[in-house]
Image (cartoon, rainbow, N blue to C red):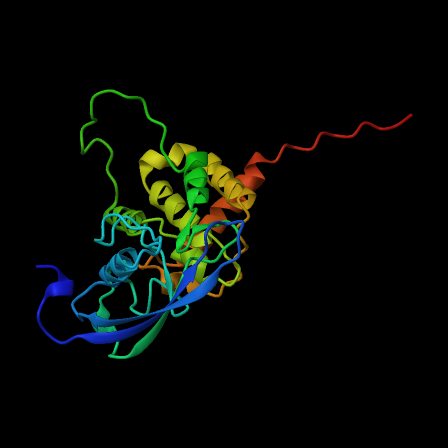
Length: 268
């Protein structure tokens, strides 16, 4: 039985949802009221109920991204009442349930706002900038072949644990949406830390950080000015200390890659 047809108390929810046909057209907030919302619904299920009603009335459904609905894919990227993924800490939109709201609540739903994340339609934004940053260096180059012996490359447990903490990043973009500068530093530093903390990623550490930071700058993301909103909004709790680690790696790698200045010959 679906949440919408389950028995139990129902809530009235007033929604203000951003509608925009394309990135080239202006958008606006559209008002809707739902009178039969179950507290057990997830936020996305509530939007499904609204879309079912809109389609039944011959209107166009609200476009929004989703996939796993289990908090692991990062697709459900919404700004809810001004907060990326909503009011609950370390929670993706798909994990947010309507019991977090009271009967009669008014909720504003908008897309992520950043120049590097242009609106595609309604609540859907183009986050392919993240894909291009990963393509620039977010990988380890290895020769294919049989799997190596698991114990052939010892990894200290603190390094392994810290690497896994950063590997938890799902690339949702909440850090960008929460940052006043629309910076992607937390995302990029998480990917860099994940790989550079392991011995397998060490050979390409310097080239990786230079390439990924350069790609981030080309995509038009803002600079980090230590507001720490990114860490507060991250649904996976990626530590902001990773930004400092990336900055140290970038500075060191940039200095090493700088060509040595040649000696000037004395003029005649």
